[in-house]
Length: 131
Image 1: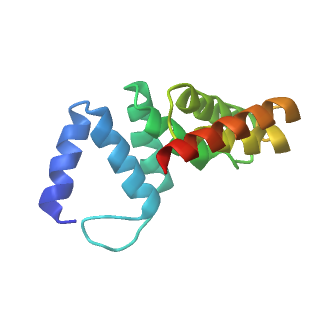
Image 2 (image 1 turned 90 degrees about the horizontal axis):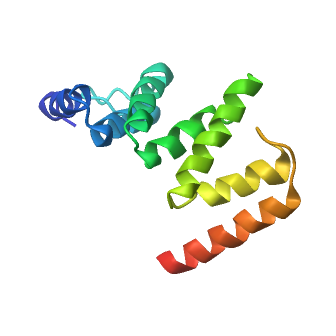
Image 3 (image 1 turned 90 degrees about the vertical axis):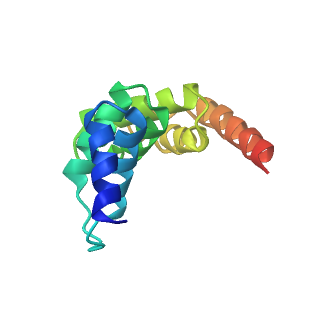
């Protein structure tokens, strides 16, 4: 990515585009930068993904939820599962599978094998539609 491209996305993100905010968050997670230095920045990723979530970008909700899911703070993990649930409720692929993991293993929620299995069935059905 060039500096010009990055700055164009940054300008759109600062102007309130949830789509561009989400992309910036993803880029910081993956370590993409205009310098191609592969520098990951968790705090900038969290900042931009949070803005995107507030702008109703449900892909960003899944990404932020996945990023926070294994945090040491129980409140943060519970928040992560709520974000992933929000993404699942809005049809984001992969969110229901992630919820299966959460409910199956009790990550951010109480273990609930019945609910976990429902999410797994829904995730499998969604995956079959994508193929």
